Image 1 (cartoon, helix red, strand yellow):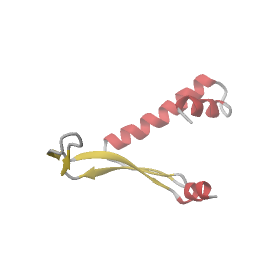
Image 2 (cartoon, helix red, strand yellow; image 1 turned 90 degrees about the vertical axis):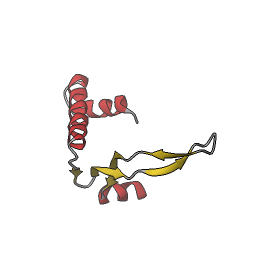
Image 3 (cartoon, one colour; image 1 turned 135 degrees about the vertical axis):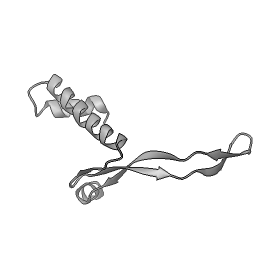
Image 4 (spheres, one colour; image 1 turned 60 degrees about the vertical axis):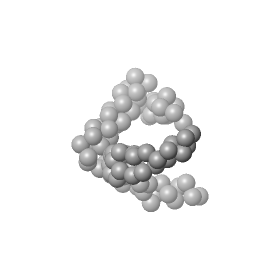
Length: 90
């Protein structure tokens, strides 16, 4: 499922596809803004979006084998909730 498919699914519940697109865009932008501010977003039963910090580390260039430094950075992380885990498992 991609973003367009998700909008079509939401459109089945709301009055129009335009409203569905606005709703999906609003949810995604709200999650993005919260993560930019290093806040977590917990959707009970679904899961939690949070920001994880990766430490700087050494890596290797696979083409040359040369050792290189990989900078520290922040990455988004999703932790699925119990209800989602159970739905996928069954």
